[in-house]
Length: 404
Image 1 (spheres, rainbow, N blue to C red):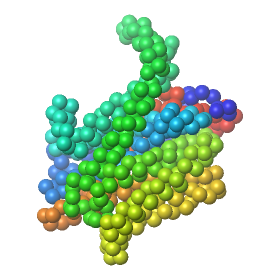
Image 2 (cartoon, rainbow, N blue to C red):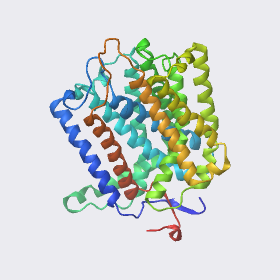
Image 3 (spheres, rainbow, N blue to C red):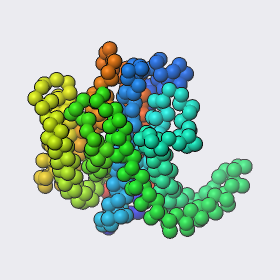
Image 4 (cartoon, helix red, strand yellow):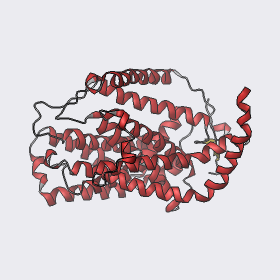
């Protein structure tokens, strides 16, 4: 941190040709989202009684939860295991997780038929349902993430509250609240950090449990009793690559030098985590003797090969080379491969491997479903950009390093 100031708002304009294109993509998704709420699921999706879930659950929820794992992984590394000098990546990882889980929660609401009953799990408990446990943990963890972000809000606005006009009567109240948050959250934050890691452990694994109860509707290449463990390990394994992926994109977008000393150091943990996941994955295949399905070339085996070779094996080899972990370009490529690999894994588990008994045709996402998913991602990018411009999230280099 000697070469950096404290985290501070990025002095960069919000609208650029790139953000305008992203905004148009988000607007297209919002149009189809409005159609879903006005005219129902059938007007936008290709879902039916045989395929009650599809792209929105596989990507927006299952993959979204996994790819937001950088939040609890960075919190565990920095605050629980006390790995030194991780400050430049902890706040951006927290923001990515907070936005990711916000869109996961909204994605669940969009995907359920009667979306206005999204509040039911809060009072109608079903302790035997894995999905109930996932829902409760996601809501609790999302609350924890917003609490963890509060000190950043306080840091930004403390002693700077100056509401105009009639709203100025709230200035003293808001300043008092800032002082209360500053004095109390600092002392209690360790509780929320530990709670966040525990809650993440629960719901990351329970998403795997959700597919275990699908039973033999799933293809044997993915159906396994240890699916909750595989989901949890893969979420941890993608946590660091997701941090690297997000950090390098932010550095490029704001024309700053990437945090290579920090990124290189955490990248050294990636081969170990990927190796553990690969060992469990292959060991499970041989114990269940499911490897025989890989000898038949079809859409299932091809999907499995793509997921494992490009999402696990090649990056595992890459991250063992010093040239990769010290190069921003190669580090980005390797991290992107792991991120895409986990995305493919969740799509394989929730969509490709899922074969309803009485389905008469295969499920293919509609243009509306794809538009909503891509629109969510675009909206997330816009919110991330706005927040880092307003709040002290990113550690800004020295003035001489900036290239505005």
